[in-house]
Length: 202
Image 1 (cartoon, rainbow, N blue to C red):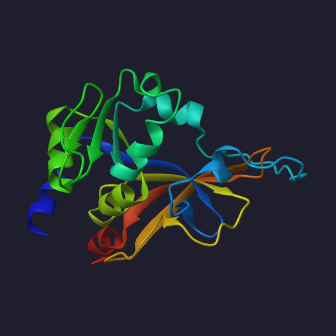
Image 2 (image 1 turned 120 degrees about the vertical axis):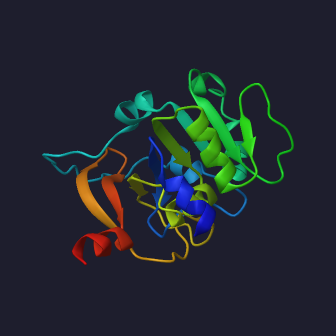
């Protein structure tokens, strides 16, 4: 773990907020996410009551000061009409070995350690980690503290997965959940790597 031990000495929280198909995909193989952003209408979803709701975008995003995303996610969001206005006031780092240069709106990090160094040096506090590969890298390194997943009522069969293999179990503590009018089931968890639980019980 050598270099990655340094990544745990940090003053910031790594946070995930992401939509995913019921079969675990965040995008089709070609990057398309229309099934998430523009779902078909006409279904009569049940509305369930919840006394403790998950985070929604309006309660999550304003508190974010830094964003870290992978190259595929960056290629998707720069096509949004809101880019770059939606990131105004937030520092954006793209984790990529293929994106060659920093731009006016983003800083490029070649490795996880480089991304962490950027976050530490810029005194990050609340870090939004977005994109499958970036989330997987941060999660394996123990750098994710909170996950909000919104499960979409659709199966897309294949695509880019949200989660891949892990070195250890990652234990999740439920903090809230709710449903939306579009049939999404949103759930917020706090994250505790299993090795941290073991350390406290030994």
